[in-house]
Image 1: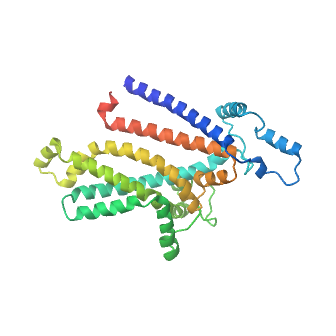
Image 2: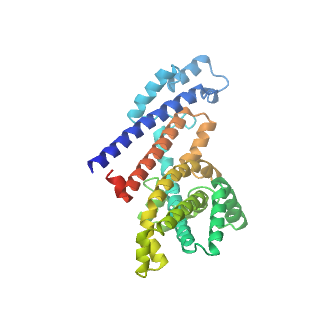
Image 3: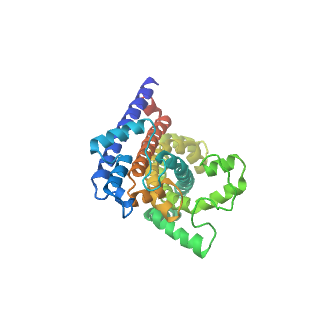
Length: 337
């Protein structure tokens, strides 16, 4: 156990160094690329003194090194600066938008795990039958289509041809919502606001499908291969001799040994899923940090871009750390290594 805790501590320290490296790279790149964020804010009749004052207000009047040092000291105490385009505190903006993205990504992950796991189990059950190529072909087709293409296809199918679900937004303005937090879906469920919960869930269906389908196909492929490898092991053959059905063999014996590599790959793909929310949120006008990131780049909003990149970087690092711990928890050899 001490060795395991030491390994976790080492990973946390490495994560902190990685996040610092991300901050340095992004900070420098944003200041060397062409374009001036202040030029997008000034009015045509602004004097040089007014422009200089605005640069000083946003800390853009010093060298890159001095700017980074001032920004880093502010970040340490929780001051992410003020958004140039929205004129609001960056940390407040992130606090309002991040829960929407986290709920969307979590729902997509749960959907992908359930669907991908079911496909993998079915594919294992029908192995060496005429149905196996059908399952593999369908799964491969789903995997080949990127999330933004799924988003556009779902809009045409479920939003235009068969208008079942809302096309954009997170909640209908007509639905009364006096939420105390920005986790609308979770709070509406916990506080038994079922009308609001249903409306929020209906707005999430198409984005969740668009993000979750490719991930489900990846999970299905990896888990099926792991299950097929586990099904030829001696302990499976021994359990089969005891009269257990194939389904029971998969669920009770093979699955717990095949889930380790699947968790590792799912964690990596989940980080890509969070990155994919940038495009999908834009397509569905979903008010998350992905949609806000595009606006920040268009407006060259340096403080907001920096805050968004730090949030994305922290999410990626935390997810990978959590996945490593889960893999170790499911594998005693790694846990005691």
